[in-house]
Image (cartoon, one colour):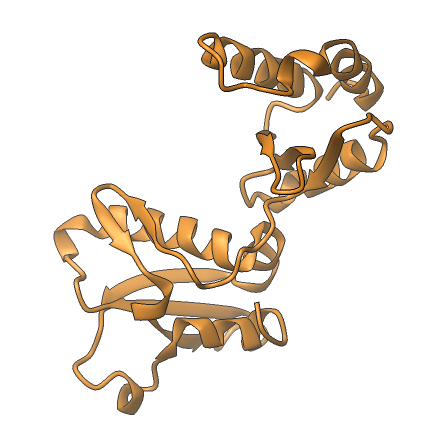
Length: 196
């Protein structure tokens, strides 16, 4: 891992070019930013864009891998003030009011249910079984990946990685409530201790 100061020095020299990445050379620009970030730590990723308030944002992520959370925190904690930019550690949660599409499948938090799972070897660990009315066993990996993306977007990267130790997917029982399932938005109470 390189010193974070080298990344920020590079970013300050080049930040003008990243203020608007919606240009013909978008992929080249994003690859260049990723290369600079990977020089600091090859296990980090980013999202960038302009927020509703007009400020440019750079969100640095470890893609939920807690082994690299300290690298994210260190990088963002040492960010210099750059006018027109906001630097954010980890993908924030956006709540449950949107749908995610992945692999041709729609993942709708409001139409999804979950069943809390507890481990007998570690009773404090939280696992969840996420149930879908349209679940297809033949597409289990797509459902798992789509579920992870949906949960990371709804809860946020840190909450999902640190609070949920196990995720599995399944067909939703015909009577979910009597089978112990709860509507997915209620997961925020378990993971975040309140609304998301």
